[in-house]
Amino acid sequence: MNVTLILLYSLLEKLIYKLMVIIMIIPHRTPCLEGKINVEGEEEHLKLVLSHLLKKRKNEDNIKILPSGNAAIFIASKIVKDILGEGNILIPDMGGWRGFLRYPKMLNLNPIKIKTNLGVVDIEELISSIEKYNPKALFLTSLAGYLAPQPLKEIKKVCEEFGILFVEDVSGKIGDDCGYGDIVVCSMGSPKIINCEYGGFLAFDEEIKEELKKVNKLDELNALIKTYKVPNFFGLMKEEAKNAKKVYKKCVYFSNIIKSEMENAYFKDKDGVCVFLEYENPREVAKFVDSRVKLDNGKSIITKCPLYDRILRNGIVVEIKKMDVLNIDKDNIIEIVNILKKQI
Image (cartoon, rainbow, N blue to C red; front, side):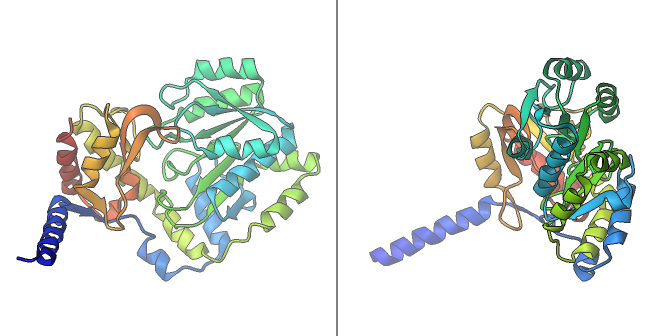
């Protein structure tokens, strides 16, 4: 056998091995069929659906459709500055969004990390931090790191008592109990609960609108928002928003299956759309899982930690929200569990 044949045989053998090792392909989240068919639509119809998904419903005139969740965070930061001026804002020490650190700074708002219980706000700690730092606002995700819910009602009450604005990122929890913030921001990019692969929105209370009028900043805000031109994807966004409750519940259902089966899972008694599993060697575990299961777009179902956006502990996050949860079943999740258990 000549050298060329030997090399070809070796390459073929490696290819066959790789195909044999990856034993599972999971469909990834894509926009729903109804949305793909009805891409264009009426913006007001979209806003109506979005308003009904927020616990503290916003006037549809105060819902602004934007190109991204990050754009919404930047504009929310501007609203805080316009109403209350420059100064400190509070953000969680983990389980938030990196945009909380970046965009407020552009407007001379100073983010200060407050101690949390693995991303979940402790009310006494929040009160103590407000008294210590005299912040203008609190920026928070409704679902800490996509892993566990925040005590939103209690947080809102504290913010009201101390006169600070509550900016709530509902991207991971929309479709469930969320939307208590004075200002709500949300991403509709991928992979999110409203999964349009593009877009986001900002929503604010009528009281915020009145405060902006008092400081002569409402017209300026509206002019700024007009510079964020959004193509007519309103039909797609509406159909995805209509599915938000169903998608959220399915993500929680599958996450709870993993948490019930894995001893090293965190937040076992909390609802989340992803699952954190503690490991001392997250890089090796992620490599092992990636060799045996992938999404059908070639991407991983795993996020390695520590990571500010998830949790600052050694381990991995199983990204249920990346999976096409409406088109997989419990058996698929159990198969993933069996792969994970090989690394305990």
